[in-house]
Length: 118
Length: 461
Image (cartoon, chains in turn cyan, blue):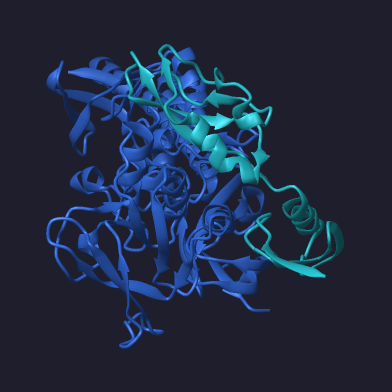
């Protein structure tokens, strides 16, 4: 039986949540005050995901860099692959919020899109 | 001299929202003055997500959130000038500003909205002993360098202070291949959001050392290392707890200070707790027709609340301009009647009526300016914004924002109208990092015609 200790991020309370695991199966979730904590903990131990934000260089714009993000959250373990894939990427102005900068980043099926105009 | 009904100082989130709301309140002549090369303020460098959950019901990045408001400003054709530094504002609302195309120029404003934001506390405010080498940055400066200019300020990093910008930069620099060794926090709790501690530190295995501070900075040309030490309950370093860290960069995320040089220059009264202007229910300062909103007023935790507050400032400034217009007309009418009387030695009933109503209006306005109910912030509540209320001028529901002075568990937020408790709300956890608020209902306050003070405090039961 494995125990995973987490802090819920659902609200400022930050409940310390303990998840008991038997191999890949969740046996129990304790420490949470509300259902959001339970849902957060289950997702966090089975399929943790994050939105990744970064920047890429832009040519011909009135700024040096534009900010970008993964359009949806991607698996947590893919964060560094995503950032690496963006290294060396340069785009040409004009760029608009929502433009796809890099499709299907790091094999996640998720696009990286611009979050500012340039 | 050019004249505008409303001049807004600062084109960040507060200035943008105030401008949009003033235009929606039917003010045509609005000017935003911004010193940077684009609108959006500090949001442009906050490329992480988590903005706008309250305002737009979705999670946006900083530039996207700013973009939504910039779009509205463009659509509503609100005038703005970039690269423009405001040098001075006089008490009669003449704004002196400069830029490289117009040179030094003056603008007469009907109303002024202060929306200059805040700046970061620097090393000088902390009294850290040691040399003054290169490699010491405020977290926000590092953020601008990495996210907007494309520079990495260092490779081996120690961060002092666990404010949100420091936490966000711990993650950002890690993703850009810097090695963030530790975040040290003087207080026994973090000033940052839980979510940021988990997703910026825990995700990357960066330790957070509470009750620790930097006691020495080494290196003559460039930072070579820092020494951390644990502190006691009075925040004094405990001898024997020192630990050395080799690093080339020290980031400081140790608090924000509202940027009020312009405000104090024009005689705006500042609060010693918030370092921002003291304002009434209309977010109006002690100078009539001068309003304040956003981080220049008090440092906010979420930009959504800045937008909300600034929208109120915009509406109130619009109302002030419109009422001033009416007063001027009535005054002219009253003067006209006086003149007619002098000329003809008699007056009609109509003239008499218009004159006395003008006088009444002026009297009511004068009275309402002076009869304000003070809001006392005591027992764990550090301050409130606003800090005084003219009941007859407040909106139907008035938001009063505040911060608490420590971490409180299972306490009640209470509001008293003189001796009578009208609100008693349980809060499982309150911390200095999070802004709190209470809502006052005008209807309820009007039931207390002799109201002297409103008290906002924390109670254990």
